[in-house]
Image: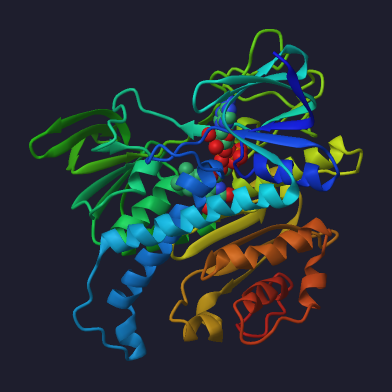
Length: 476
Ligand SMILES: Cc1cc2nc3c(=O)[nH]c(=O)nc-3n(C[C@H](O)[C@H](O)[C@H](O)COP(=O)(O)OP(=O)(O)OC[C@H]3O[C@@H](n4cnc5c(N)ncnc54)[C@H](O)[C@@H]3O)c2cc1C
């Protein structure tokens, strides 16, 4: 078999792989990108989990369900009457599918424009930087590259006690495809994905029970934010049960009986559908042939250094399949970094400043250290918080919930962490990421002009509050 030669072959065209391929082509390299994602219709689609079954479809449904909820619960306060508010899940799903299709086809267009050879099918790394490509019709081709980048992503974890059946017990993708609002929905796991999906269906009218094994709510978030979030989610009607360890699920005539134990002992709840959102695991199935030298750790992650080198020849790995937060933007930056390093350019990714966002209402976003982490580090610190209740813009939006919180070092004023719960938190956090990327001090933020009236003034006021110089609220 003759081998086709490339400078770079990327396996996986999710948010880690496709930016890597495009940047490598921009750098003048001959690039191929292989992707095997197939949608429910059996057709291949680029974009990986993020575009097909993750970030984009979930945000489409979050937006629709939030509008419905606001029309139902908030429009009256604006003096807007909507008689006979109705819900058409089929149209909602069609809109979502259209957004997904436009996004995934967009990647095919970007590959074409950048000159990337796009190959749909399976890629398998063999020894000596060779890649076996199997197309959809089963035919195989031998490819070889100076550099191979593995970007094969992750897959949802399953609970042994309740395997996915695609109908009543589903993963996050399944929960984005419901054709009707389930009357009673069980969500296993109160992480980012569980809370987002629980919010979607709760806002559309489902009774939602969230079972979380840990006693602590959102342990990775600043605990002041977690406390505030729990209050709002419960107000929305999410029945969040902490310390609830699921032991079994049994489908019957009345629905799925989910058994769990908590501090009080054996419990049970019956629901119509269950979403298992307990986390994701790295995906390397059928990826590594004999003698590649690529090492996988006990949890299944491909081992890499800070520059995403596997240590095996010129093989790199990026995105969910390697250590670090399983986030699209983290994978994207790694992909771009690797493409630049391959081209001999300087590049790095600062894993300490990866923003996290939970797209609920109120939205939650943070970057850097939590107050608990700073306290544990022993460094003297100061905190400034500003409630959105005191923001004219937030009140005008009828969205006064939450606050912006900034934590800074007492000695040199360096910003150590920023945490926002409130309207558009995911957008607001970008300012904090940029400020921290440039090692800004609280004073730098204080002296930066923020337009009025905007939500970003909340962050400005939080920076001022850290030195007891807030203007729009009393300093304590
Ligand atoms: C419901 C949900 C919501 C999410 N929301 C967000 C969000 O709002 N923001 C955010 O940052 N992240 C979000 N995520 C996480 C995000 O989707 C992932 O972090 C991201 O998709 C990881 O990108 P990746 O490129 O590493 O992997 P993936 O997106 O999983 O892409 C990997 C690709 O490689 C393909 N592949 C695997 N093996 C092979 C092979 N051997 N040959 C060929 N192709 C192969 C796969 O089919 C897939 O297309 C969400 C995830 C879910 C499930």
